[in-house]
Image (tube, rainbow, N blue to C red; front, side):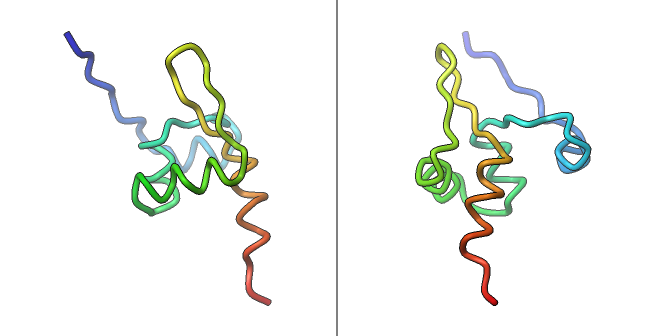
Length: 73
């Protein structure tokens, strides 16, 4: 039997105030306004992926630092 995951209300507010440092792939894709596969690739390229037992978490601080490297000047 599969368990349904509850959406985190106001995810952006939690991240802005530093209360949620790690997100799952689906939460991160929503947060960064991109597709799931694109976010997975981005997280892997940034080395921001953590495997905890059977859960995959992504460190949003590492993703933010990695994305700053692509900023146009």
